[in-house]
Image (cartoon, rainbow, N blue to C red; front, top):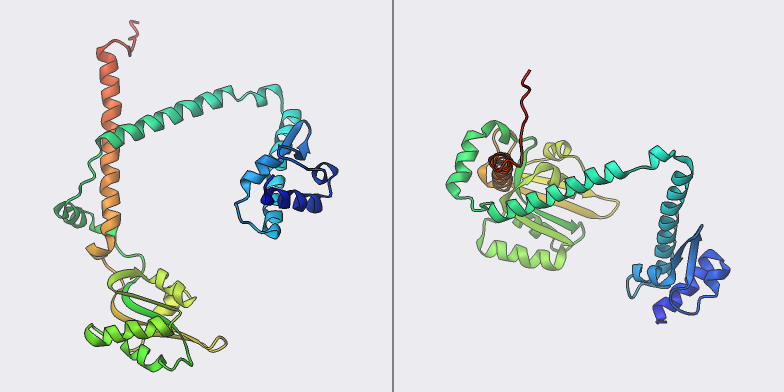
Length: 287
């Protein structure tokens, strides 16, 4: 038995106060029982990552044991209280089996045939023809963000240089934030959802937008001696989202349409081929 297993056995003994557990001396001893079902130490041991402390092992072990016991207790209760008809799950299992097999074949069929190449022209055509579905739900921004202690000796310089367009000023900002800011990111060339940015300030996006002043968003947290600030390079509050912002969602939509078309063709081909081969026959009522 390895050290972790010995530690786990000791933890279980203390945790559960069980004679069975306290007598563990080798793998596959019982650590818990529900009726005739038994949980063995080897199963519990394999569930706990190597290097886990005894304290964490205790918490993980208790969680696993309770989960294991709950599952079996539910089953015992259901077996004893449901009628014979209620316990008959053959139809459900067969329906699930058919659904699972169909799904797996569809995935293989799609993977073998799906064209994943999407050109810039196709992106632009989709963007033009689906304008109504690409309306912004919230503002989007291009910003540069920093989280900095208010008493930092580099505070004023970092805040001032958040608006740097490039060159030495931007290099200086990178250097200063590396040594002085717990968190810094530059999204000056990439659109961000206002709700995502608002989470950095610990507020809602409406409140955040209302705080924009001279292109800066600044939140001071005096109780923590901390400032979170962003310089807003661009903001779009409504209208159709820019193509660069919705590029990934357009790509996903195009691929989804192609998948649906493939599945539609698959279904039609299956029916036609089966009818041609007389595997599928519809009998007409002669009356």
